Figure 1 (cartoon, rainbow, N blue to C red):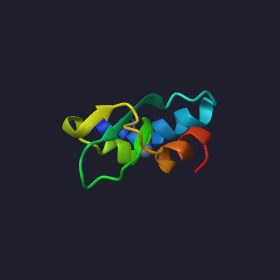
Figure 2: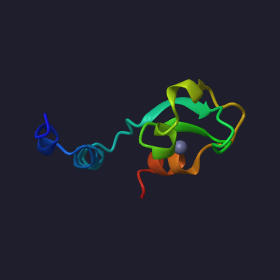
Figure 3: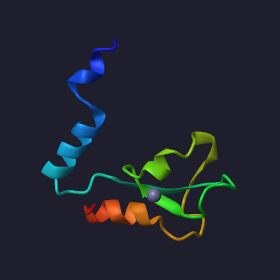
Figure 4: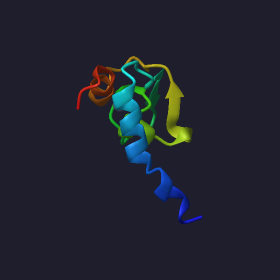
Length: 80
Ligand SMILES: [Zn+2]
């Protein structure tokens, strides 16, 4: 079980996929967090760590009328 992850480290895998495919696969339907302590932005990238950190129970579909997360915008451009 512990040796399983050594085969394909998640970070390396996603990085090589990103480099190979110019097509943007990271876009997901807009979602936002209803948690008070979270920033009032919406996310639409599956690669955004901030978006990924939102717990399922705090996650809502849609933009919530909020501005877009700049990290998600970054991801979409394929830049760093
Ligand atoms: Zn984001």
